[in-house]
Amino acid sequence: MQISFQQVEYRYSYKTPFEKLALDDINLRIPSGQFLAVIGHTGSGKSTLLQHLNALLKPTSGQVNVGDVEITPDKKLKSLKPIRQKVGIVFQFPEHQLFEETVLKDICYGPMNFGVPEEVAKERAKELIVKVGLSEEILDKSPFDLSGGQMRRVAIAGVLAMDPEVIVLDEPTAGLDPRGQREIMDMFYDLHKEKGLTTILVTHSMEDAAHYADEIVIMQKGRLKRKGSPQAIFSNPEELFEMGLDVPDVVRFQFMLEERIGRKLGVTCLTIEELVEAIHSFEEGGASR
Image (cartoon, rainbow, N blue to C red; front, side, top):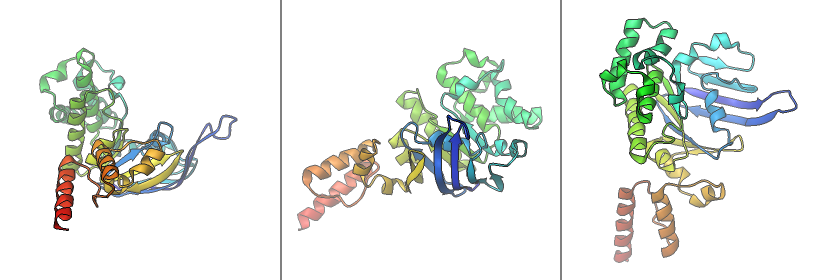
């Protein structure tokens, strides 16, 4: 499902003494099936941008298109309800949104609220609980008897049970250990590929942005600062450092190596394997001269 932002502005507490500009002249096109990462400092407008994707917020001016649905300042919220089915948002610490007596009821709540028959919702729950790395036996348990990592997976299954065409991930691995972070992100990436989803990831992890995204957007002070492939975005570490942002560890190591030898390797490496190959090519080129 294609998404576009056209001259979007958003102001909190609009037309009050507390008015604050959060998004300014955002123009962005996200093709159907793309995996987009959004990076930037806290307060840069990342989460505000995300909340426009399923009409949790409406632009103060401009227009957001999600598939064939238009979100404009004067659009009635009631007419935007169907978009909530198409766009699933996984917020930070989604386990805080669990509330039902059993895991099964929690996963089924969303789709049944949108008219999905109970039996269909239960079949989705059985399928998805396995996809998120848990067993069917857990469906009869209270979500509050589970570990933190299990609760998060249950909450994610609840979002996926809506069968969205767009999945929005707002720091989905916050608070998890490195192994848990990689497992969750690999799961989302597999689902992205398997179902042909349009996926938008807000993250502070430059590794995740580099590893999973087709393109990266940098937000700064409510504006879209840059957009490009991971290689293009991380090809100029100095610019990111000046913005107070980090780069993947491999890129940082390459940057330090190039400064030390006083020459460029000629390519931006995003994995250790790419860096090893670039160093070998560099050494062979030097030897031939």
